[in-house]
Length: 314
Image 1 (cartoon, helix red, strand yellow):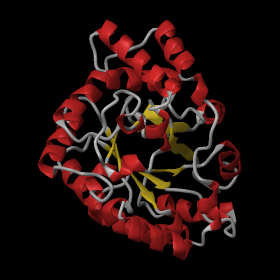
Image 2 (cartoon, rainbow, N blue to C red):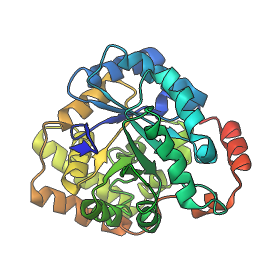
Image 3 (tube, rainbow, N blue to C red):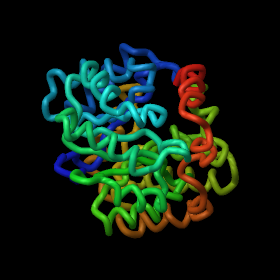
């Protein structure tokens, strides 16, 4: 798969966990996990300036120094929409290079959307990144955003998507028509789509998908995934990642352990049958509706967003 001019393969990884904050992390084990995936076929890693207030970017920067084949993506915080160039400069110092720059979430309502997109466009125009995209834009907002750039295209929209949160499917279809890729964050629903016993990370306590997984419909999804995994002799995580690929999305799971890293690498070679994809679709049909991002966020002024994220320590 290509995101704009960038050859990214079919599965990438996200590095939110490397920021600490909302995750309980053994950083020695974390480094081994990311080294394994990046040395065994995965060639895309995503991070953001707000993850650990730059800590995740520093972690990724160390990893990619000796791995020029890896595509590096990061995100400008939504409250920094008008400081995208300065944010990107700071991020590049931590990362060493940026291939894909993204606006992490839509700007507040009082900001003209095209103004925010054109601020992002300056990052590419100034040679700080090769391509640009957005994150957490629904279909309607993405339709508007696509009209905004003057010189460079928006090549991606990174949104939540997994068998317990399927609202992005309209967006995936829009991407097929308009030439951008949907990058799916939380592709395993923080583990809730593949197993019943989860860690106590704060990030999970904030995720509605974890609660959905406990419902009868959610348990049916997990059971279906596990049944397919057992029949194929692979892990449930590998099955869900292969389902993403079949659906036309580009999943970026996080990995905290070597075992999780091995599941991601195994997904690179797994192709589900049409019947298996349909089986997961049928089991998860209760979760097609929903929203991609809390709209109330756009009603919060940027300076209050910044304060909230600082206090949340994600």
